[in-house]
Image (cartoon, rainbow, N blue to C red; front, side, top):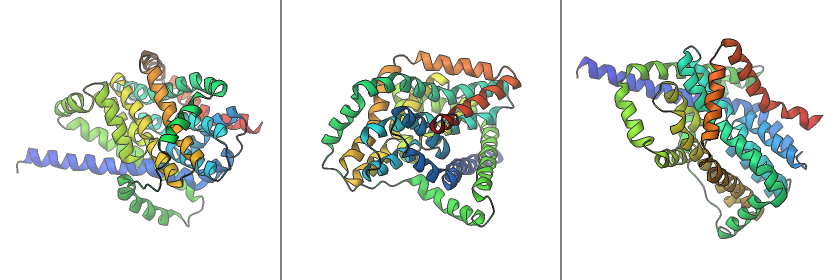
Length: 364
């Protein structure tokens, strides 16, 4: 084996290990939030008699646990337990779409040292936000008036009324759970364990990301670019399908979208190519809650899960033809953020606060 080939194999191994650690960091981040956030999130979800409060609660709860499928699954459980009604549950599901996008934006900050890379990575991360925000702004008032998502979900549920008791194998959990359990044991007896675990997950995530970026740069970039552009992102359909399959595989749209941000930062894919991929991720992330709901064999719970799918389908039908809007907004905000350090700090702080400011509206 030549030294050049040996070096390439070593770099590939480094990328694979770094990717594993990166995914572990993302999962640990969500896990750390769950240690002090999911119970809090579930308690808040029950305070949603007002549709707007439900929407805001969905944003906050998902921002805490960074998993729209988890939030939707909690909602499914609450509906199955008669703690939530169907009309009150649907706005929470809508809000969950917005709350799940923080992780990939944090990942884009890993490119902050390089202005050009950061601009590409940040625009790729927030295009998902703008799609979700546009969809909510359009469909939330329409749903409150006409209940078209609820009615569509009921029709879809009736077609699956005989299904139930399904289980779904999550390969990501199979690979990462032993490490998460081991790390859990290391932190469980420490004071402020959830906070320390959150800090550790950030360090792990950004450390692994830096190795991915550095190693990928030194590999044969042209060949990788050919693979991405010729197969995975050859056209919008392939990108969309890849987003669906990837998210079904890992059962987390935040992971699916986060993993592509380094490629965007490196210039392998454009925000235009990533947009249909994120739409696919939105569809794929509904699978977990749908299967959980089917397993409950609760008609209303299944309808809630299907409402998440219906909401995303309607969003795609409307905003894929209008994709120029979220793409333009993402590029515009990325240009502003990369203009100066001050602009970056302002935009990032405002962005994060917008996910948690709704708490004030819920309690005051």
